[in-house]
Image (tube, rainbow over all chains, first blue to last red; front, side, top):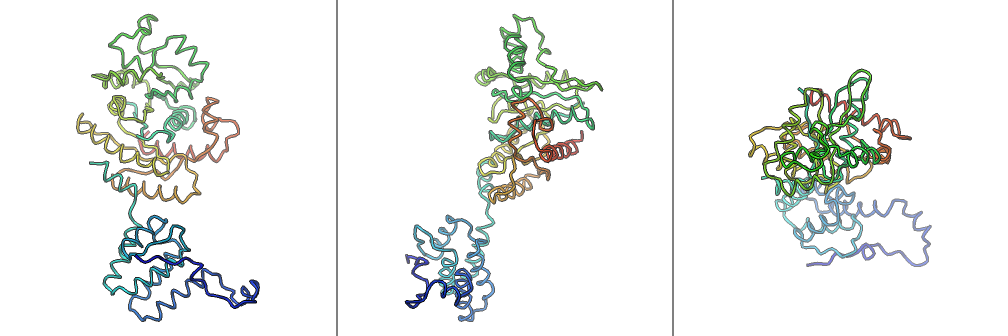
Length: 136
Length: 280
């Protein structure tokens, strides 16, 4: 199982001697926006037919709309994509980047099934699961 | 015929007694309603009795006065010492909490911790409360039964007494699991006793409204209730520190000192919606 990199390792390196203020002035967008832009750029570069679905998925994971909660996120990454997440999770945008990388390696039907599994995972209700056990 | 509603949830701490007491006060004391209300405290923890009577009156009338309680109704065939020695009738278990000039009133059948004795010897006692209520219900417009959270002979007694149930739910994960437990409890009862009980609805209680977990719990409860065919009240009872204050004072929320009028208003909205749902 591949160990997912942390956000520190994926940060772009900055030449020595440039102050934090200058760096911020040169890059007015937030780190989150930059990470999401990287994901979109990667998806656009592959010219796949389900680009919009993948962008929606990436944005949803990064924003916390999909795979809510670290437990759900870990389960999905480990069971479906064989990615081992570190104990201290990186940012969701970084996780989304690596999920997209792995999704892009899968073929179109497999990718569609995985995205559907994500949608169903977030609709599942813990209360409904308990109710199904209790009510005969 | 009185409307008879059991307020029940298999999860404790969801605010059944507080809600029950405020419902009773609302329909008896509010001029728009002015109903004759009987509240039956069916919980060995006797929170509703504590709320309604307070410690002084409880000590005076129940402990020292040997007034019968709901326990005596269940143990009437055993001739409990208190009932025999004080030569009190079983109907003396009904205590007058408030009487209003227009002629309506609020009565209580109190409980006591010894009711748990009935749980240890439950056989053939489940009909005794419903028989007692059948004899007195002509004097009331509404009978509310505050139930204990655990499945027992007292639950069966409540089901036999009531026509409908109201399920208060606190919107947090473990509390919401009380919902399928009630569903199964009701199904088991209906199968065993061949009596169909209505579900007045599921009411959200102790709501704070600013937690994502609460929003998620409410959504799950709504979906599950819909699958059961149960109504969920849109009106919600908010969390407020004034409720325990009111219990200490022995006052309903609309009379509790320093309680916000918005809280009382939301409780009133819920009560009115509840009345509409049960046809009061």
